[in-house]
Picture 1 (cartoon, rainbow, N blue to C red):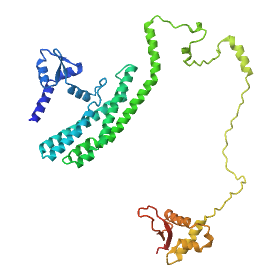
Picture 2: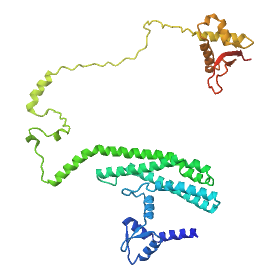
Picture 3: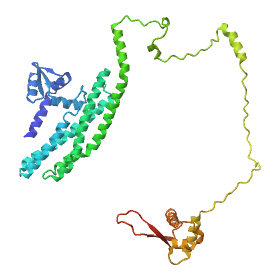
Length: 409
């Protein structure tokens, strides 16, 4: 039955589309003999509401819908006006759903759940539409106003609207509804719509809102910077309007230029002699003779040739001595290669008095580092760490006491 009512309502709107379009674009529609039946039918379906005698306007809900579809900008539009109210409904619907479920009223619980899902979708659509509208305003810098004062007031108004939306998003994030829905009996199904439409989109909405707020505040700051100069221009324009016969005084007749004349940067003039003037030809000739002669540089083209040995000294080759740990590692690997059993790195270094200056911990670090960095060269050797027991079960430190090296057959 409800399905048929929706079809009938849409058919009425389509049948009387000309009257609806006129009411939307003109702001109102007058009742005449030709459209009297159409206006009566639209008024019965609450698409038109009386404005004055024999004049009708579109219903507010239908006008807002057309504004959103056509992206029509309204002066001081109530952006996000119902977001707080829609968000405030959610806790009450959750409580009623839980109570109906605990009392065994399953039909009422289902009805409350449907209302909750509808409220969630309405809230998500309202937030998305409000952010899109604010973004459009921020991008076009409020091109629907003409004066600086209007721009400033409108900017402050929409900053307040953006802050209201931010407060509503903060309450939704801090309320923890998503976690509580899964724990409350009979509300598990509500968490799906809440999570997909609100909880998962909150970070994206907050980031977009922060970006829009930064643009609005930055634009307001620029307006405040321009305002003093604009005020002076408006005062001068008002003075010229009230005194149309005003003529600015001649600058040559003023002993000292006024302060406002010094604000402009003077023109940079460059003097150039007129070579065609015979009166200055003698002076220019004397000036040209007084100039110093320019040095003429003859540039010689390089000739093709060949490199010759100019008897340069032979290059000096400075041998680089290996480091002590590198010498010790080579000897240690030689000992491991000839041994049949694993050899302790600490015990081997203790037996070699030549490397007493090399600390034991540094020696173990060098052995493990060389093995980690050059596994291909040391592929025929196996290194095993001897680790100490940690001081605590949750300790993340690895203490290496020794390294056992053996030859891989």
